Length: 258
Ligand SMILES: C[S@@+](CC[C@H](N)C(=O)[O-])C[C@H]1O[C@@H](n2cnc3c(N)ncnc32)[C@H](O)[C@@H]1O
Image (cartoon, rainbow, N blue to C red; front, side):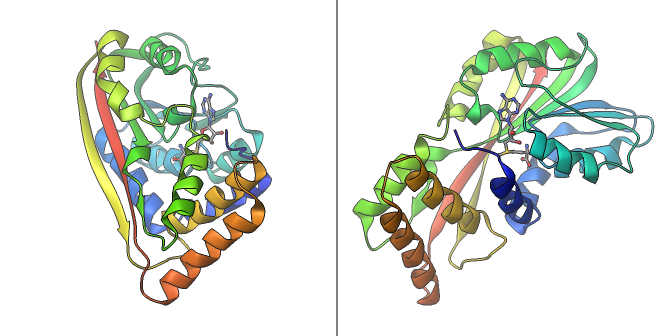
C-alpha cells in the first residue's frame, strides 16, 4: 500500500486543491444531498477538504466526524476544520468507526474502499453507524480504465502493473452491487466520470499520479529507479511536444441503508 507519510501528504495536499480533485469531491458532495443539521461521517477523510465542505453545508447544528488512521492526514484535517465546532477529527478505520449504532445519517468514503483488504467489514461498519434510510456514498478509481499514452508501451504497462499493486482492491466498483445488496443497502446507483487530459497541469490528477506511480514502482522494487525516472521524463517531453494523453474513469456509488 502507498504510505501516506509526510511527503505524500504534501503532494496530495497540492493536487487535492486542484481542479480535478475538486471535481471528484463535488461528485461525492452532490450525492450526499446534505441538509442543515445532518450528522455525517467522512471515512478516510484525508486532509479534510471534503470534511470542511460538508461542515459548511450542515451548519452549526450539524455534526461531521472525519475518520482517518494516518496521523499526518488527521493533523491537516484538524487544522483545516479548526474553525468549525461541528467537526470532530478522529483516529479510526473504516472497519472500526468511532460512532455509536445508528448515529449518522450520511456516510462518505472518497478513494478509501480501494485501499481496504476487507471491504465487506467496512460495509458492515457503515451499515452499523448509519440510521435506517441513511445514505452511503463512495467514490473509487476505475483502475482498469486507465489509458495513458507512451511511446514505450511495454514500459508504460510495467509502470501501470506496478501501480495496481498499491490497491488492495483494484476493481471496487464491479463489487459494489453485490456488496450493497448483501450489506443491507438498497437502491445502489453507480455513475462513472472521466478525467481526460491532453495537456499536463501541475494541479492535475495525472501529474500527481506521475509522481506517485514512478516513486511507488521504484521504492517497492517493481522497477529500477532509472526506468521510472525515464518514464516520468518521457511524459514531460510528450506534454512539451503536444502528445500528452491521459484518461481515467472514477465511479461514484450511492446507496440507502435498509
Ligand atoms: C487517497 S486518500 C483519500 C482522502 C480523502 N477521502 C479525499 O478524497 O480527499 C485515502 C485516505 O484513506 C485513508 N485510509 C487508509 N486506510 C484506511 C482505513 N483502513 N480506514 C479508513 N481510512 C483509511 C488514508 O490515510 C488516506 O487519508
